Image 1 (spheres, rainbow, N blue to C red):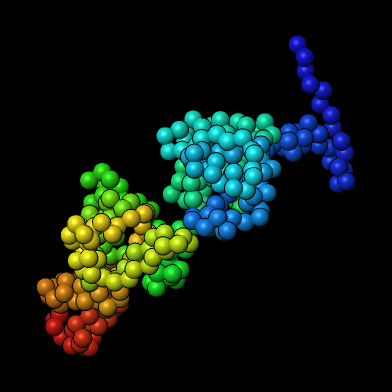
Image 2 (image 1 turned 45 degrees about the horizontal axis):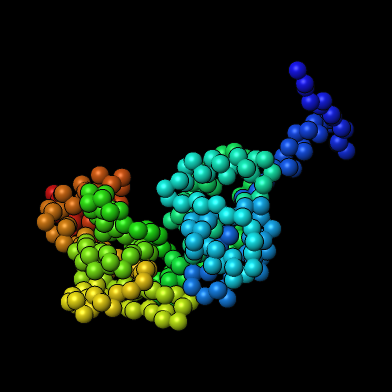
Length: 309
């Protein structure tokens, strides 16, 4: 039986290290997440082009789409498909190839890999295996749509596509009911009207949103208005015929005024004692609970105290 000879060398700190182990680490490959244009090919960065050219393999969501990009930039690197339906087994294969020293570049059809994309599975597997994952940043439809939406950008939540399972979809919609951050969702054109109606039912017809599509393309469009406005616009067949391309929905979160109004309505049905008890159940001590209940009712703490006697 053959055993590899282990070679040790002394470091500058006087310690001995295993050269074979160091070489094994150095010879491991790397995985690059490479952002690609979401519409305008001029948005492809020189670093992205160089990374794709120098990689040993490109893992693409749809090789039929990616080949057009590669041909445009005269990139001849070999491709393999990596998509929703083979993400687990292919992720193992890609990690194994990286362990053997190959450099893997990952791309999605458009935008940033691993964001609402099978690439997230590969990232987890690679990190678990000790493979370095790095990024070549670039376009992302969600963040780009948020930037031009006119909605608040300081705090936001990305929901990607709503679940298609009826029960899961209802749970997700209900979870958004009291969301105060700006919400970003993706939707396909043939489902847009239905999704708008369901969101309006949960969030209210007067809630403001922006519908963004075709970003960076010739027919880029950003529409702003209330759910009521869009439901009327797409109510008939002629309106629905205008729906083309994948949409990004950027929806304003519930305002503080809405929250206060809802709380006031809920507290109106409580007795003073029940009102204070509710705050105590939320972890506030008696003094703070009375202070908050008095503020909700627009009275002084002294008045509330006498009501409780």
